[in-house]
Image (cartoon, protein in one colour):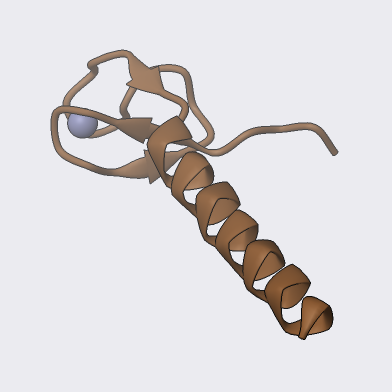
Length: 54
Ligand SMILES: [Zn+2]
């Protein structure tokens, strides 16, 4: 259940393999995407807090 999706930085292919099946390059965890989602959520939380204060 903890199998992470990996992304090839060479051809942007999403795979569960540690090496890209297309170009055989090592794949990486797409961490930047996860970070932006977290940041967006933080923005929502700040907005909610602001609304409650009024
Ligand atoms: Zn690739």
